[in-house]
Structure formats: C-alpha cells, structure tokens
Image (spheres, rainbow, N blue to C red):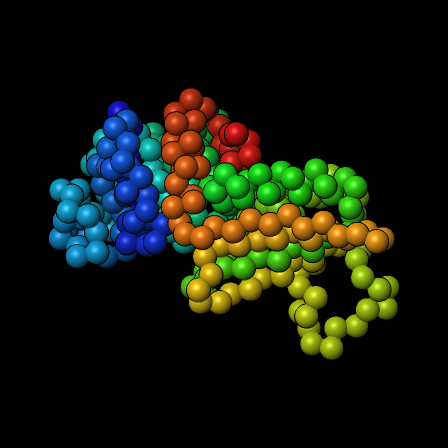
Length: 263
C-alpha cells in the first residue's frame, strides 16, 4: 500500500489524481497540500470527494506530520520545486507533473536524490501517447532536420512553451545536427511571428479556451512533410502515466526526467 500526498487537489489535474488513487487498491490518499483550506478535510470542500483526508497549506508541516511514501506534485513551478525538494528531504518520493523547472533545479534535485538515495520522477507529460509522440519525433529528426513544433493548450496555462514542447525539442536536438531554418534573409514583420528559436527549430504556443493539451511536430523535406500529432481530450489521459510513475519511483534512487525513460 503506497501512502500518497497530492499537492494541488482543487486543480483539474489534482482532482483526476484523487480519482486515480481512489480507484487503485494499492494506493491510499493520506493528505493534500493546497494554498488555502488549511486544517480542513477534503470532505469540507464542495467540489472535492467526501474523504476524511487532511489539507495543509504548509508543505513542511504536512511532510513532518504525515507518514507518506509518495508526493504527487501538480501545482505551479515555483511552489512545485519547493514541494519536491522538501519532500525528498523528508524521505518522500516525488512524482512531478508540474512543468517549468530549470536545468539548475533539476541538477540540484538529482544531487539530493543521490545524497538521500531516494527516487524522483519529473515528467513534462504523463500521457503515454504524448511520450510516444516525443520518441517518434526524435527518431524522425535523424532524417528530417527541418522541423516546427506547434503546441496548443488551455488559456489558463502559465508556462509557454509547454514542458512537453521543450522536452520534445531537447530530444530532437539529440538526433539532429544544428540547422537554422527558413530563408537566410528572413525578416519578421511582427517580432515573434516565427515562434521561439530552439537550436534553429521553431516552437509555437497557442493558448485558447476549449483546448486541453495538444501538440504536433511537423517535419519537412523536398517534396514531402511528416506530421506526428498527439491530443489529450481530457485529463484522464495523464493518469495511466502517473500510476506507472508511482510504481517506478519506489524502485529507484535517482531523478528520472521524462516518462520515456520509464517506459
């Protein structure tokens, strides 16, 4: 039985994660971390399940008082990093779906994992299909060096480009020699029209109500194009990957960045 703390229970991802834990006999929700409702129970919050589970605003207090194995972190980058680091310092293994961590933060967490001999999994995207989309794109980049990434998310997303798009670009970079795309004398009438420049490839971010999480990677070469696309229709698509990560994180003593390294 894995004892679980969820950070961000009122969010759309957090509420799905609560359902995930409830639906598996090998998991038990023991506490939640929320930016308000300190001292209340989940049962006291109208939009949350009727569970006798305590809510903490202070993560350190939660980690000190609650006996837990795993933190499922689903908040925002600034708080997410603090929660992840504090959890590891208290012997709790984080499974992190919060995006926007810097390379320096991931390096620090990797050092902490090695020092404490504790596992941590950080995944920009927990949808299995999205992970496969990233892997297929990495394979294709060996043969199609011209590539644009278009990622589309709901208009409440805080980071742009998305963690999935950044991770995709990082993986493509491993297979692709640097190439600056477009005309050598290209001019942008409106700055940013060509998207963000990452290693010569372009990343475009779309933010609109009605979207959940969508990405297409478009490759081009003379006479042909190749598009690799993934759509998350709802947030249930991420739960299979979170469950996989909660199983795997109990077996490791390192930081794993990217669910493709777990599959």
